[in-house]
Image (tube, rainbow over all chains, first blue to last red; front, side, top):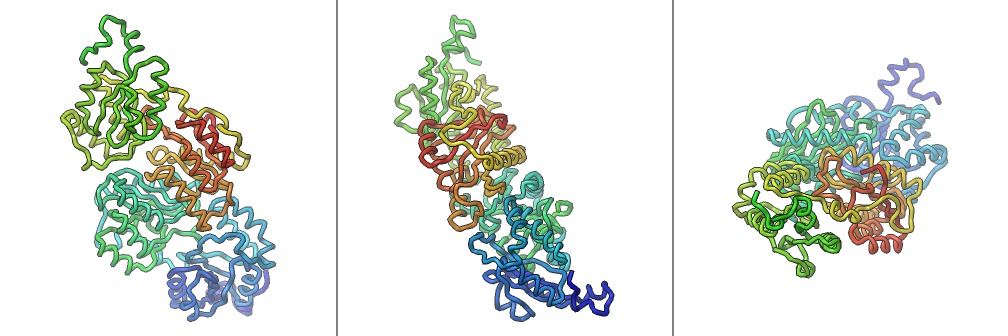
Length: 296
Length: 296
């Protein structure tokens, strides 16, 4: 491992405390939130916004280096030059098509491992990434580890609470997610009146909710409007440093449009973007948002 | 139980052999196939086509009584008048909205049991129906029991066979379906390169395949065109007399449009409508259709 400038003349522990945190930024508001909270806590941050994903307006307020995907060699050099060891990867990142990537030499070096990881589901891919980062002397840290209050806690977020009937649907959803968890698939299901309406695949939660809304419009859903729950939880085997499921105001809107009663997530296992806005939207639509203890 | 005219002066076994088979007909070609095959075998059939679902053109070639959904009282009287004890329920039947049903008195009698069954998933509903039919002296028979060659057997249907890679995807799909089976949900998944792309909910197999096609068009699927398998199997707990999963030429078209390599079903657990047409379409699109032994 190359010696890092920040460590000169300091104990390892002290060095770690002031070492800047690298934040690899995808799209959406989460990188903004995490960068702000970490910087406010006194730890310097260096952003590595991903071109085409991260929001340029936000990035400019912090020290940053724009990155292309697959420029891992350049990333390693910049990390070392900045004296960073810890990195957080956060934000939306639609899975890229391989042909769109422009590889650099450092990426070519790890490419066989990426290719192997690519043959499985998401878990394999992300686990592979974490492994070669560690081999290069970096340390992948979960956004929730540097910024614990981005996780949904136990109990309701807004004014509404789930009914006994909703609690049954939530329990079924959580059991189903536990059963599908070994298969490295979606992290959300919709259950209404004990009937599973939809299971998330690679389309994502928003698209699944849109599907439920369309099925309702077509009269294909037995349960009346205002019945049913979106249930979301991390996979049991998931590397939580890279890929915790996330909800936010848009999820709340999707739940409302789908005509469901509310949204339940595993407490401590799901990130909540923009909690105030999400709670306001939930109350306005009279739906509940609840963190369920013991389900993560 | 009211004595049936057909039994007069005959042994019970002989009576059963000539007793007409009642076929409650939903939409699609399956009722046609089953009626034709049973009639060809020498057993008389009486059709109970469901208004709004069954095809009038086909029905007119057989003795029949048009039925509305939820006219269970009338159905019981007609069954007895026709000397029918065994009935088959076959054909597509989009789940009706309760408010669209016009109930008769016989239906009202069993309504509390239907209502209870309605609170669960499909399995509960269908099990409930089978139970009260039996209480009224009728016997629910699976279409595959009177007409075994409508089931997909083991091995390939057309010219193509799955590759070793496809076999891996098939195995993952079958394991996933076994894991979700207790939750009484969809009976199909799409797996490509060991990655689960889609899980069927209430939207049905055709809609799920359309989703995969759309995700592919958006560049959201990593696996190249011609990779991936639709895997379909009955639920483990499913009452096979009422609801075996079905594939046909349209499923083959959906698999081709989604850019998959083929379609694998649990041998002996899935109905194949129009096998010649399905095989021809599969060969034309260069996709495989295979029955997997030991998976039903």
